[in-house]
Length: 317
Ligand code: TXA
Ligand code: MG
Image (cartoon, rainbow, N blue to C red; front, side):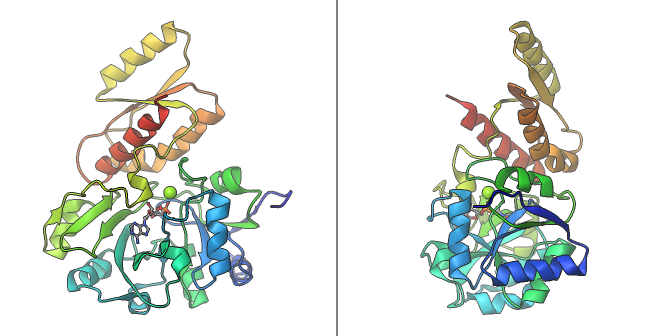
């Protein structure tokens, strides 16, 4: 779109919030920090801007967007027939990395949902995003600010590297503290389903909802559920433990293939926070293979396994 790279502006400055509001009200897109990953944000009320998201990301229009709100109180404007347990979940986990799918209100345009009557909503737990949202008196729709199918950005620089020529500004809110996309929960069906694993685990959700979560039916309704997703350029190999990783690395080394090992299983919070940055780093270092050890356990560990397994599937010829 432009010959210039997007400008990174300090999210802690009042002037940056003012500038972002101006951009958004002019139907422009901005890079938005959240606690999970950076988003490519458009004003929810602007159909023109929402359409731009799909163009810039090269994303199929049948992959609907997440609506970000300033707080729990906004929910009643954007969703209808919200079940009691979903209200409890939102009240408990927001702001935070839980996206809830609900019946949409008339405020939600077709562009956001790809014509569905449901909408995905979350309140991000990031001071810069929250400040911007509370200034707007509107919602922000934001997918991860990367090209479709690629690795999500966890810093303002990642956004510029991917989409810098397509947007004017990226609000810098530092490195994302979670590092992996939100848990997505479908609350529009008889059984609640997790469509995408994230930092908020099944057990935590069941405890607050006081309901049993059914296993996802495997239907690809969230693009994160596609088998091939989250793909860097290098090949990703997944293994079960450190010993296997080292032996694979030695084999590859003998064959003259440059491979690095990703193994932070003793600290899944750190693993999640680093994951996408490391995959990007591997690409910029022209590493051919990343050998990643899969962490065990629920919650974030499950989310990391999900992303790594999909990145590995994308590496298959
Ligand atoms: O952590 C996150 O969720 C980040 C940050 C920026 O908030 N956003 C994010 O957005 O990961 P995106 O677009 O990359 O992933 C959103 C997922 C997609 O897989 C989409 O298909 C699914 O949410 N989704 C959105 N609305 C839906 C709906 N009504 N029904 C089913 N799936 C939906
Ligand atoms: Mg994404």
